[in-house]
Image (tube, rainbow, N blue to C red; front, side, top):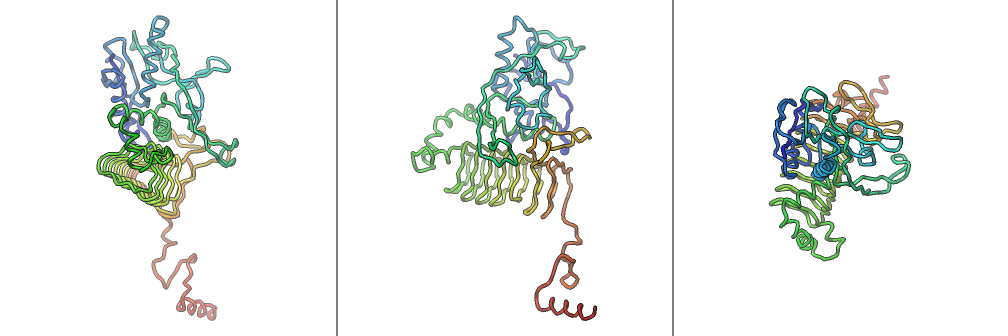
Length: 418
């Protein structure tokens, strides 16, 4: 089957890069789309308008749509089953935690069939006949993609979750449009299970030998110890024996320090993880540096980013961005949902949990904290006011006190003079 990637021209702020160049699991969205479509048996061709569609039946996908392998295969199978009843089909997912858990404001458009049945629709079409002059929405009917959903639950404070339980939906079938930087967090997190299985499917010999590799690394046949060494590693990786690495994909020449914990993460080439760091559900690019003792959850960091803040959650960091120690990004809204900037307007994201976004080469200095949902433009540098910095030990700012003998003598002299 022929598959067409329709260029939309969408750019993602604050990076000002096309959606197809944004990183998903360590590769660009365009590379991911082409690889998944070819794995599904499609010949891929990029086009600029609908007039370029020449063959039918065909698959038409917008270039800003992220989808997993099982989502495309499930959609094609569902469209084939309804081929006699529906000529043109549009992909849809039934609303559930999978579509509503994180930033639902930037998911596909919601279509309600009844009071109890609703779907999220996406720009993925199966076309047997096409009228290029008419909108695609009027030529297609919704075809739900079947999927099974599991939930990974953990205990949470009731300030963050009224139920006291934080859950992450897990499914091999997932779609989301990359319209906002928050979608990068969602795509990298909820698409992680399918990506890990896709890596194993591409390397069957490695998949077959992975249990033996885990037993060799752990030095034991106990399942609890083997789980902490169950990962796919590139060449010349250096991992400390005390590191716990679970269901992760490591690039080449990755260095992981002692007592580090890596769960459900994708780490690029030549990345360095400090001792005692905790990385969960994150995607890190090439040559990323993570300081020791910090915690990253559900974050996306592009190439050469450097992160030193103690805790970061559901945030995006651009190329060569820096987050210094003692700085941070708030990731929680007490009332309502986190508001973000989209197309020049402040809009609610639909989620109470959401961090911020640093553009390419952005620098956040010590003691600088960002509010949740904040975007930092490319090349922006934020530091404390120079008035609060010590430039001369004889003329100190009001917030700094000199406590040695010379400082005490100076204070006594000032008091006598006053």
